[in-house]
Image (cartoon, rainbow, N blue to C red):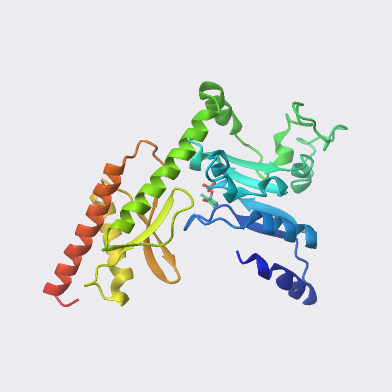
Length: 284
Ligand SMILES: *Cc1c(COP(=O)(O)O)cnc(C)c1O
């Protein structure tokens, strides 16, 4: 996000009679794994008295990696944060956490009337001290858009109890190492182009052999992806960046090795070359 534009955009919105209510930043974006400057967002939210939400569904967990903590600097200042434990914290889907800096805020969002279900209790929304049971903890319907809801946090609690917190850190560190390794391998191959040095375990790249005309890069990369995916041994997704198709990998298996990544890239390149040979044989 171009945070330097926030002041003028908020002013322009207010001039048009609109009421900005919140800033929403990404940590990180799903497509490229890019982090917004949370500190700058928190400053802007304070200046304009806006709610600050950070979508950390994929990437807020990098906070556990000592080498990457800077990516989420300022996270402690946000009003609310989403964090998917099924993305980088090894829980099965769907295990989403929604965190509030002020515990009482989670009640204000979903206030509603349902006399058969919800009763006022004197102790909520109450300030909550460290280690205390949250006020109204047993009535999760008051804190959720849904009514019937699984106790998702039980999975996280189970992982924490069984393995301790280190396993999460080790995992986050390791998938980050794999992201850097894939980027390194892509940079080594003149037939491949890296979109950006990855911040995290999301890596975008594409096949760009010299014989491949620039205007056919997107179509050929889409064909490479569908060929590899249909083959069934590998799963790559694709994304569009400034109108161009890139191949995209999210490295989520900590037991992936550099050998696996090399084999995958070899297949990307040989598939691309095969498509180029075909194109030369049949003018497509
Ligand atoms: C995966 C993802 C989502 C969607 O979350 P689900 O809970 O898996 O549906 C939202 N935002 C970001 C940044 C994501 O990576």
